Image (cartoon, rainbow, N blue to C red; front, top):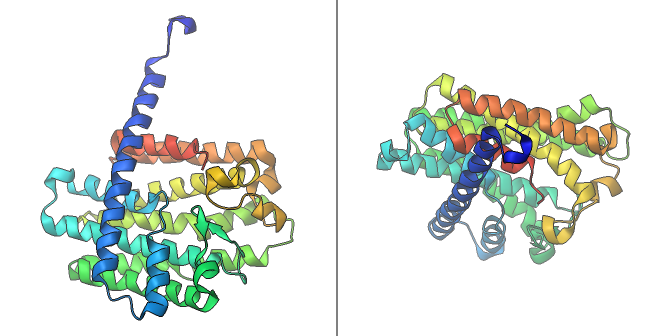
Length: 316
């Protein structure tokens, strides 16, 4: 077929998968928001001095990518949404809430003056700018512990134990916390690309991998299903972070909902700094290619493929 005759079947399929994923992601964002709103109404958030800050942080909007991965992997492991009984749906929802609690806690602490010192998050003033630094620290602490309380209360015991172990490993010193420590230690240095890749693996990819893994666990998936889900989540996370490095240079505050150029100004190690803009874009595409392959192996179908394309091409 002459290229001028119209789009190829493969490009049409990609477009269709992106549109399906976009619609599903918006529906899942609304599902996540409803679950989080129920959670903050029903959970014991403590005295107003921390409850207000916790609520403000958790209901601050965002893409809700991690809960979406929980749901995607959960539905795949269960054989589809219609195959999930009420208890399984509750377990998947608990996993989605838990992962978003941990992610939100990390943002609250990252934004503190002693960390990344940011005033804007998700298009709003950061928690410490509204409630003060002490309340922000305590709200983050509360969110982290609430995550594990939610897993323990929302899943049957064997699944809760597996999920707790996976989340603790991803969020702790061998994961996100360790990555943040390396990120802070590298400020002002010209880090090699391999060092930056380690930071991205620990700080970003492991928690996103855990989101997909928790979804499979919550739905009663096998160890093999959980491993494949985690592999897909890891590739998504590395794609996301590479694109994030690009957007820190090319984006604007109105679109991003956060302050652009912060990494560059702080001389943080980024793929753009190490590889150049085109090199960072190539790195994002390499990880996206891996995610596409894993989407098929994990049984994530059109939605899994479309989600990769959406995140690889995102502008915010």
